[in-house]
View 1: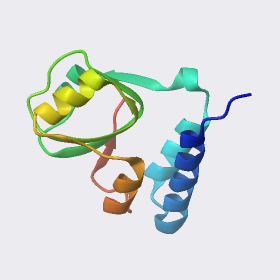
View 2: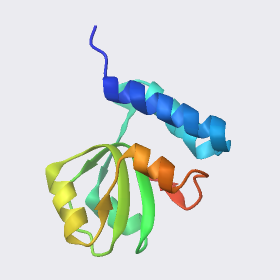
View 3: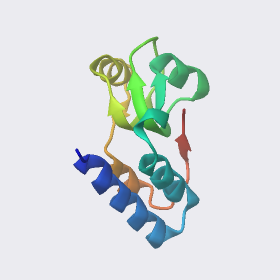
Length: 116
């Protein structure tokens, strides 16, 4: 049986963030990550463009795919992201951050939106 070290580390990081801050967003993301991989979300860049505003911080508990275009800055954290999506997000002035960076910069989970 193969194990995914990243999801194990992420689960512990989310659990620690929830215990520290009691912010429900971290518990929700931990539950999402603990579930089957087949239930993870796939979100295109075009959906991010449609449902977000400039300078928002979003997390996708799944994969961000590169279909579509985006015309504003976003800070995106995702469990997985395609090369094309990365190019488009960074090309629009946005940032891609890790889960640890997201937890450090928003420990209480405020102003972080779950997309998918």
